[in-house]
Image (cartoon, rainbow, N blue to C red; front, side):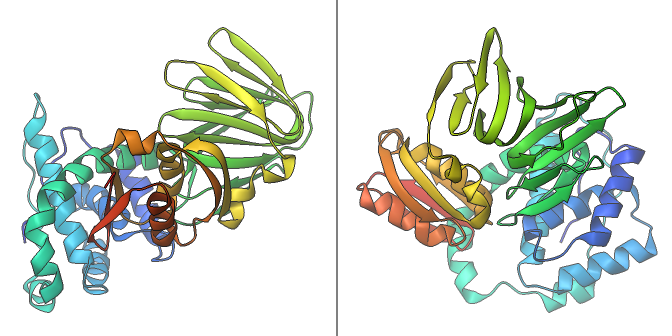
Length: 346
């Protein structure tokens, strides 16, 4: 099995240290094999001769039959990215998986059947998803794994519940407290301090705290803000709105702002995994479901995706919830592999 080609960018010393630090605390409960492979890739790019790192990589590779699959897919994605770059960097020394690891792993018979069919789709999905994932993890101060909700206490005592596949960057100073939501969802309980204003920025949308508990989401390029208690001020382009308990707004990529009201008790309810949906398009629900699923969900039918739905779904069982969501409205979920679901209209 061939080792990693170079990305069309060079790993910095900071990114290398970040990757190694993440490997030290990485667990199967918090990282999918795909995410783990991406983190290993960063570390091994710059330290192919680190004996301790190589030994730990070998142990990870041998720990699960799917780890070599994820590693091979990560290398193929990197190869495609490097080949597509107009300024390709010099190819570095390839990291070779040991013969012992190659002998240990053979593709199970069931996977042999779907592998040729799924390869093209998997490579396309991985090429789109891996590069942003790596860059995101290098930018974040706190991140969470698929299906995991992490509770973080910031230095001022404010508490953040980080949704699945979510990430934030924190910038505190004596004059203010700034948090960037890089991906996913976060529920904030903010310690009041008028001398140090608290604000959250997500995709150009600023939420300034006026003393509150609120959530901010960034899913599918759409930023949402909802208030559980207290008040916030949301600024998006030239639009400014103040929200109280139960108020929400959504800002799409064109800075179009929509809003409404809901029960304040539903704000942040996703932390339990039970998500109540009210008159929202299926495509939006799938976007919110993606962080709970360890594989890829591909929606192929725009008409189906535009259908409004209402209901409560248990995202802790995303595969079953996806089947229920789609079949109720005339769609179908094709189970291509254990890690790939394709949603069609018939």
